[in-house]
Image 1 (cartoon, rainbow, N blue to C red):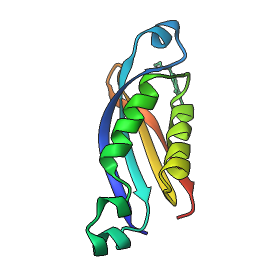
Image 2: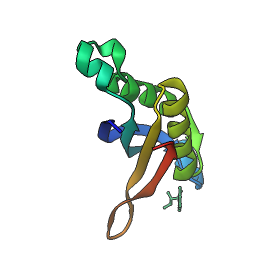
Image 3: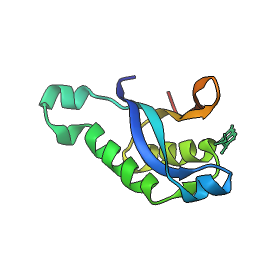
Length: 117
Ligand SMILES: Nc1nc2c(c(=O)[nH]1)N=C([C@H](O)[C@@H](O)CO)CN2
């Protein structure tokens, strides 16, 4: 399977189970592996024949900037569903990380895979 990827996309969103996390946006990092055939864009050299990673990034910033999720698991599920249903991905791996949440830990997060590899 071909892969279109985005690494460490920074997005501001309300995320977390604590009252402060529901009121103050945090910056999270999202990394995506988007499984989709790139053969037709590889032949045509036309952006309309592929999943435009710039459009994906802007869509995620807009969607997540307007929402609150308690858990990273739920946010990752939301992103995976969006990529499969709205962007026509066949398979996705979604990694979502919070930064500096715990003393002595750089990042914490979840990685999920959805769709058919
Ligand atoms: N598996 C998870 N564990 C935790 C999450 C989460 O989203 N998934 N979230 C929190 C708090 O919101 C966190 O920000 C406090 O450090 C705790 N554990």
